[in-house]
Length: 88
Image 1 (tube, helix red, strand yellow):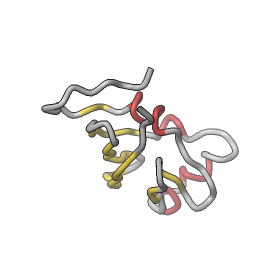
Image 2 (spheres, rainbow, N blue to C red):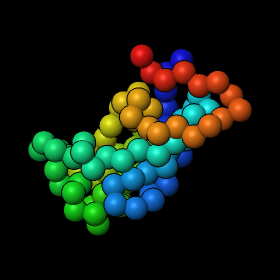
Image 3 (cartoon, rainbow, N blue to C red):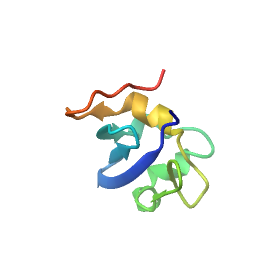
């Protein structure tokens, strides 16, 4: 199964609530992931808040995005009635 982000909600600072197509839901904190040429500009919270959902992940107007498998791997998952497998 290919993992996709199906919903995103900005929470605070650099935290997002994400839903995935495998039924998983959880919170990711991207503060420690915002380094390098493409991600450093996202430290500006006004830019960070401009994220949007594409057909498989989240992206920002400057072209930055994270692989959905990576997001699932770092997410603090919420308990679910469905068993969820994290990306390998």
